[in-house]
Length: 247
Image 1 (cartoon, rainbow, N blue to C red):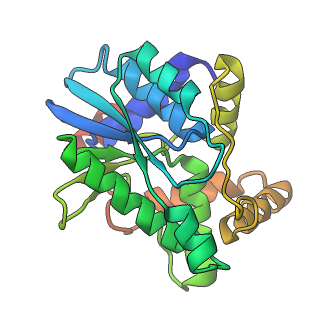
Image 2 (cartoon, rainbow, N blue to C red):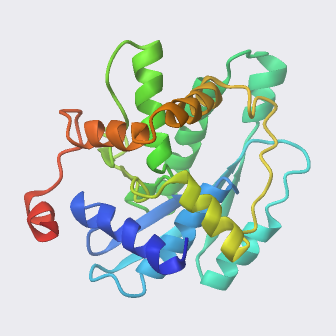
């Protein structure tokens, strides 16, 4: 995927769901993985020409694993002139040494989000950008169906009452295949995920299941994504202005 296509798909989501307004200060959650670095590229480029003026603050929540080197991310942020903050935590120790969690993902996500949101507020941000892409939307819906018995996926825009922050997901129209292509084309400085549970989660199972379903029906992901965007799931109704402009 070329940079211009990344800009186009990201801007489509931002326009249709009104994710960015003039004067926003957006905290970009950076894990060091391909998704968050692609999001950083997208927002950094868009802020140069997007009609609404906004600023960026990159934040990484360090879970405390030894040998996790974020120097390449720091270098990229310096190149983009984006301030970068690393929040050091003991989340990894809490999950695997103290609590000895066998299914740590849910608690880990909760702790990471809490640390990220707190840092965003302290740094004067009013929005937090997550790097969830189109495949994440689809896989979340499948996880919800299989393990919760409901049809649900996270929304492009979510307002957090307790903090006053808004969570935005500008990459919902970008596929994981596009992210991988972008990573390879632009040689993103990806930092390997040090989590011991990486590759052994329910989400990884659903990701592999989706791949098998696509071999039987090539339209499977397109159909499910269409069902989500046209559903009554809260937050997925596109703005009338954006839809009419697109039409």
